[in-house]
Image (cartoon, rainbow, N blue to C red):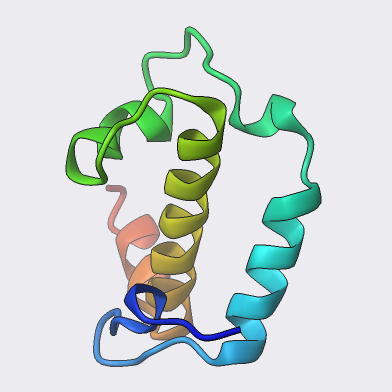
Length: 89
């Protein structure tokens, strides 16, 4: 698969194609329940939807959450995520 936007760098590095392949493959088969709207005020989707083109349907929620996962994985791979958790943020 050819990736364009998903190859954008996160904290100085771009994700390898094999990671993106796995993320997309999982995203295609993951239960809809994972991406369904919920009433949790801390829902990650609600915090990022304004930045990532809200369309409101389940497919969009799935894509947005896969993008969030891609970015968090990039931060984790560089150690940023660990530092943020240790700082209590």
